[in-house]
Image 1 (spheres, one colour):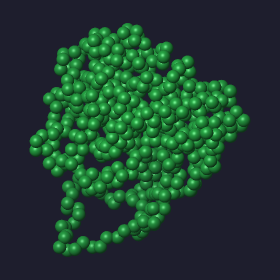
Image 2 (cartoon, rainbow, N blue to C red):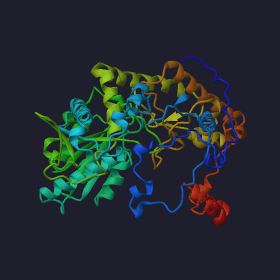
Image 3 (tube, helix red, strand yellow):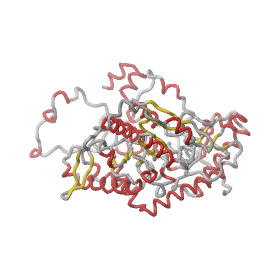
Image 4 (tube, rainbow, N blue to C red):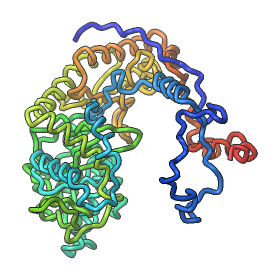
Length: 520
């Protein structure tokens, strides 16, 4: 690994108020001419039912275009984001092609309405249908729905489909257990519990995954389904997964493959070839769609023909005269409104077509190669270890590392290291889903996006911060020093009397009722 010195960096810092505190009465970014009398349709109030009319004008900042642009440019300068180096693990954060974003802003995409007649949505429905064919090829499944609003929502979709299947086969009262592992994504046990199932969680054993014997002991006449990741969030692939699926199905349950960690195996493994009845993909990550603040997101849920009749409504079908929206025979209803975030489906479709089968296959190769290259650099750093250090051979697209040794020897934990890393212009890493199975965990993922130089730089920053922890721990404890703001005091985030998500709530909680009334 190249010997890289972290670059000097200092984030822009503006004493910038919120937009509601800017501007002055009468300022405008654009003014509109009075409407032509021939186009007038009467007072605007007459166009709305009385119950929908506001009692007072909305409280909005009055600003010029220049003031507005300057405000948001300053805010963007105080954010690292993907303009730095963000090896955000377990989520496959990758570049979102600008051409796809431009397509999403075109009126044919941005201005359509989900209540339009399907005859006016033929182009979009064709994209949905075509992309479904791509995912069918990658998974071996027979049908896909894109209604789920993310990975957890797709897992919940499987729970709903499982309940529908159990009810249709007269087993709903009998099969009430769903099996998963401690290192599966938390959405699997969480959605199973939300669906009314008892959760059986298998612990990790030799090799970094639960044994076949442990699975045999957990399954039986009450088994409804297996919900599992492979590889898991430590990058460990369970080579016995085909046998797992066989055992679960012989016991009478369904097998669901949570493909959140698909990036390192895409083009290599098909869920159906392993015997799975259903699987999910994350379009907002693995397939190049944006992931922002909990959305927009899309969890693509696919299943066999046997389960397709339980899928959420509506489903896109192709006929001789075009594309239609139809309700499956035993549909579980909806897992969210309308057809889901189809603008993310459009982006994912463009990404997949741009990559092609060869590009997707190559991307998974690069992901595995980059992760193992990164590992050699990280494990050479004092204070850094990895999960299951006794397991030889390469991991998949990511590895769970630990700063437990650093914590023991310096008192500096992973949270403090993460804060200090931002002082060098790189994003802090993802740590681990709860519960932490290893002390002070962090889980970087290089994927196919980042160059060798980027990985060298990121590793060099970790090395530098760990060296600082040993030489001057107070410097790391008090970080960040070069960021737009100092260390965030998070206790207010749990105090409902203090946090506010709207300007109206902020005025009420921090400036009193009189200020709120004056603003209104």
